[in-house]
Amino acid sequence: MSIPWWSGVRGCVVVLAIGCDAGEAGGGGEQGEGVPVPTLKLRDRGAKVIGFEIVDVTIPASLHAQGLAIPAKLARPKWSKEVGPRPGVLVLHGSGGLLKMPKSGADDPCSPDMEAQFAGWAETLAKRGYTALLPSSYSARGFCDEHKDTARIPETFDEKPEVVLGRIYDADAAARFLCERPEVDCERMALLGFSQGATAVMTTLHWQIEPAIAAYRAAHPGEFDIEIPDLAPGRPSFRVGIAYYPGCGFDGFLTLSTGAKTKPTDKFTAGAPLFVLHGSEDPLIEHCSVEYGAGTREIQSAQVAAAQAIGDTYSVTVYPDAGHSFDSPGGSGSGGGHPGDAAARDAALLVTTTELAKHLE
Image (cartoon, rainbow, N blue to C red; front, side, top):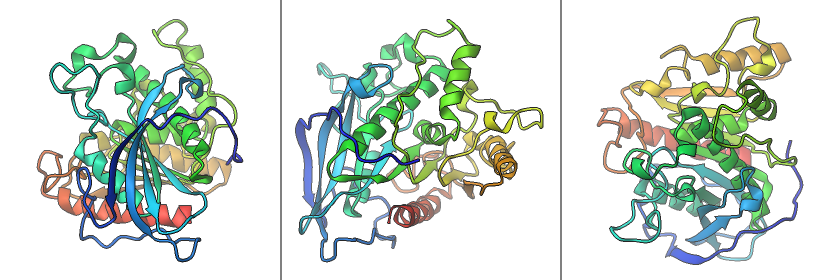
């Protein structure tokens, strides 16, 4: 259920990081350059995107259930004329992090520069009329990359269920922050995530996320070294979610049972249309697709839809011969150099832009 425009503590825009004309390449370059993709139809007739900017912002701790302030990048279009609030997209990074590793001797936990993958996505979205918020979950916790920066990962972020839970709280705080932005229409927001961030898209959209958190906390009393609080009332909703190569098992957070004895309310489905985009050669596909693995979440979602007599919101597209992180810059992507990566990148971009335009219009 969408919530109305509401007031609260706004984060502070602190640094203008990037500004360029719409015809220029910024950061890592626009995703899928040369690929024809839909652009959001403007309700403000005559207004055109003439450029974009990326600024540093902080999502305040007051919005975070665990009291954590999260640095983020905010990418927003520059318009040829004044426009009203426009659609927003919350972009969630994967286990490689949002930001590059810091230079030797730097005081900050991470470089101020985004990884090329996310610089490209920020540009792509802003040029198409969306305000995009990209929170940096890792730099908020003092490290940059879950693979390269292991020595700095705190003990409270080292267990898979804790990582899953932490990203849920981060996405919740970021959604509230994005909803508050004066340039964003809170009734027209989308989720876009990659790998671990795509898993966070799925858990954030889970139709029973509040009961699931409460049930998990009750089942594991005193077991973890992090708080597992409830989400605050009145959280914003999303019209659509797009999940690039997620792990659909959720690392113990939500049951994988598809049996009849498991209540439908304990099974996964999304509270908004969810598009899972995966590669056939990615091992993370196991619980995402019945064609390429157990397909647990696809089965559960169909079971919930049947039990509730509602439409099934789960859709999965699998690209042949594509691996993990197939949309990353650098030729055929970084999914191990799989032969289908480039084709998957372009096809997934078309799905992404089409569904964003369809659901946020």
